[in-house]
Length: 380
Image (tube, rainbow, N blue to C red; front, top):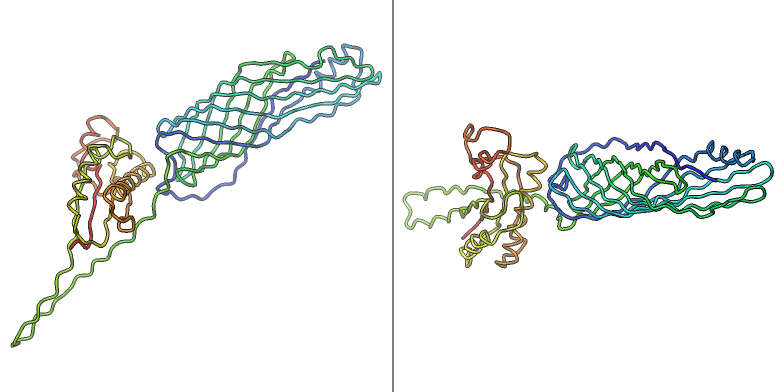
């Protein structure tokens, strides 16, 4: 006797979220990640086909009871290429679905199907606002369907345990919300095309919620408080005076050094290059024997790209410089504050670099805007 696991339509309902953009709104850089999801899987069991098969054997179906939903799960790993594309591979288990039919002359037919397998997906990522992004996927699956049939009374089963390995496809849509650069949650609706091991193809839907962890991602530090500079006004000594008191020293002037981001980092990256380390070592050597209040490291990007992406990149670059000065130069971490800004406060003048498309010429023209400024306050 044959049963078909046919298509069902899954609907994913999410409440609207009021979100604000932040420096770590979305994980924009390339990198490895892992994740897992769990939820409800659902299939439609073709009761009419079951009754028709029984009738062809001279049996009339009086009732059929279906169990067409179960708990499904998946585990996966992937690599994200830039902001918009990722490649994932994983394992899935869609659960078990079953039916029980009662016949005349008296008898019963019980059947079940269990589905699991592996997949490789191409995932498209579309940032929406702030920490929220939409996901779309298409993939290739290799699934194993294990069936079990048992008959009693007038029902005789010729093949009680058919099994099928088959290659097919899957589709999916979802949403992703990034709590930090390292951790995100997903809600997804996916459809798997499955062969039921008795000659029929159908769809099984999985509605799941899951977690994603990105390797090598760090949460950005809080924005350091502004350092207030209070001018000191020295009143002239009264005249006549036998001895003029010495004037109090002027407040220490800040020392600011600007480094080209292209000399410190590879394009669109936040790892300090060997050549950039030499410049930072020289800066640290100049500070030896100097007393200061605080060092503020500010990362700047050019105006190309979105606000969220530029904030994330500039912040990670500033944190990388701070980490290097702490680890290599021995400067106390509480003496260094790191922050990133968007493509604001450019060095290039208005009208100097024309265009919005990231051509090679425009990227080269905007090179002075990509920089890291290190300001030493209270040096003496």
